[in-house]
Image 1 (spheres, one colour):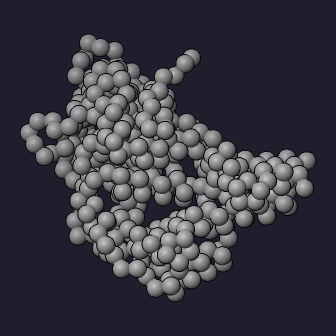
Image 2 (cartoon, one colour):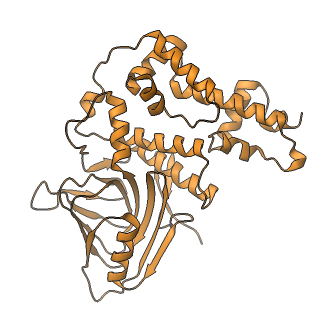
Length: 341
């Protein structure tokens, strides 16, 4: 069966599809749907079916990867879902096949409308009410708040003095393309890697991409501080980071890890790498991973069943075509040619 999709920039999020390999809820009982969804998210909410005469059929699937997750859901008739703090996650809600009216506690009436071109972002500092149109389907990205707060502190290199709060709507065609692409990458990795999930290096890359895309791509109460000028660290900081990268070949480093180790903000570390090495911290890490992948390919025997795709995934490369292109640009030959030596 053909599955329609909504195109947003260079990425597509399939419309109406479930989460690959996720835990699935399928029921016609609204009470059971609410209770089992609460178990998956470890958060309490209420749900009211707006048209009792319409057939209710919940189809919910959820899969987690460390501190992030994806949930697909649809109920058939229109529903109203209300959430009250404390809630331990931040969500980005992509919707298909209808609209979602959002009341995020800032006014007496719904203040925003999520649709196929605008995703909703919720930090849940106050009560949130979502009114789903009949036939609406949702793909919801979930992020544990402590994980997002840590990433924000690394970007700022200073403590947070207030809870993080985003503007409620992401314009997916003007500024939200990075969030869409990062979510699509997560879904693709979950589909390819099965229930076991991606290997640690790849999982950290995906997590980093999602956190950075959301914090830099969607306006919030710390945006101006993130983009304010910061002093550059000393050359010694970059040397220490390079020593760490080369002394820990199996570590799944992210730029947040490196900045925390160096005791500077992510932006300051990025600027220092650009000034001293002409590249970014993660570009340097990926080049190092390419070299590690090459060493493994040189040791591998295709007759023993080793595949280039498996080597790429182990070293944090989720897109085989891009890995092959980067490998050829770096070493002048394809990964398969290296392995046939």
